[in-house]
Image (cartoon, rainbow, N blue to C red):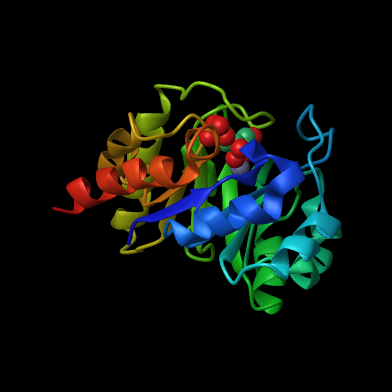
Length: 220
Ligand code: DX5
Ligand code: ZN
């Protein structure tokens, strides 16, 4: 199943609730929520209070991407705030397996994310346990960056690793993806597409329609 997960990092926060409604009306099922701590990544975004507020406005799947050091400190709070999926970075924690278990014990889906420089093979020990692998297609920290072309082969490698083990897991891509290159990541094996600027810059409904057209063409 192909899923679009618009990243609210690119939204206009003065009208966030309204823009989420637009995204939902256009047919997106996931909402990508980027949490940054100023340590794991250079920038700071937002945290639990924002998630709690928007949780009251929509039933969309909250796809929370934690770009924070030692994410194990906060997963209960993010669960309570309304996360449905919690994705953390392999590079940010000492015991990814324990953290995946902890996320599952809260009845949430667990995602594991890899920065562009981390070998894709580093996820092999967790391939069975995780629900989603996030292959970062830019350096995490900022929206609006260009897709790193080497990412395409990394997505392929991740899909091969799952297939070799008979696993049908979600592969998410995040960074610099929009209607012009979505077909590239889909062909490589990704099925959950994060898109920030390409959704929120300009007409949200039209932007989403353009990406969905790429999905339909791919599924044909
Ligand atoms: C980057 C974030 C992304 C970002 C994507 O660190 O994880 O989710 O919002 O934004 P675009 O689609 O603009 O590259
Ligand atoms: Zn993200």
